[in-house]
Image (cartoon, rainbow, N blue to C red; front, side, top):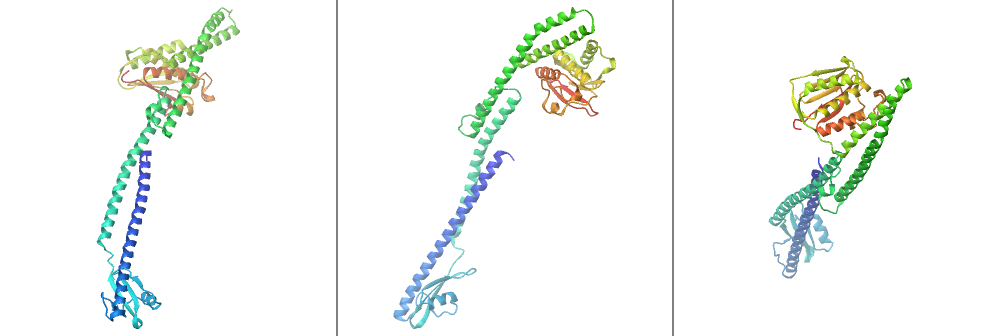
Length: 410
């Protein structure tokens, strides 16, 4: 049950209880007033009848002397020298009035007390209709009020999701509109948090770009100098580490370009299965891979897609290299429709990576090997530029599964 339904139900229940208590109180008070009027009328009649009997020895106003049906409670009160009234219970309720007269006798009057009084029936009907109408009006007002509050909270939640998705310029205060309540305070707090987060990310992006750019020139010089060293085992180690360092700097520069938001896809029409096959072939040559270390399969007919082939090849290369480095061959690449799946036979992706996606400089569990954690991050960046969906999970037969789904419309 949503907030709107809960608030509406609470308003209706509270108002219904309050209206019920009010109606019962009004009806009880009206019934009590009617009873008091009937008692007063009966008392006036018995007083007039007693005066007439004491003066003229005659009974008037349908009064009776020593009525055997007189209630015992009323008879006892009269013997104590009181003039009293008494109402018998339902059904066939009656109002009795009695008083003592000369000769020690008891004069009494009895009249029907109609429990089905027309005025009380009208009052009861009016209270029921008014109560139901009021509850309906309160329900309508509460639904409108709760709906307005719910819409504003949903707007804040939607803005929070947009911020979580990377749209840091989204404003919750604009989404909820003007106001001076807790929802407005929540929206302003969310905007403050997003602004702080945006500033931190911008500082991180600038730092990454500046560091990578400043390192590029000395690393290039280091690699050039390493190539000039005489052949030896130490020279090979220096050249190898220099190449690794250059690759890291290039990766950081690429990530910085993604963060800046300037990357755009260069679209072209390609047959996806044929392109994947040729891209894997080029990767085998570049990485000196065994022919059976990467297996390519096509399921279903060939499909032509409009995409950036360079970025698709970069994504594919990063996924395969990650599988070879952290998993076990053979790496199975399957193409069906607009979907490319890459499966290795290692321990699989960490649960944290599957749930949250790849993060920079987080290489995963120890059994997944060492690394900077940038390869999958770069793959996700290229996928976003393409408008594609890149997800990570566990393969049905064990191992890591990466699935790239290219959009039907680029």
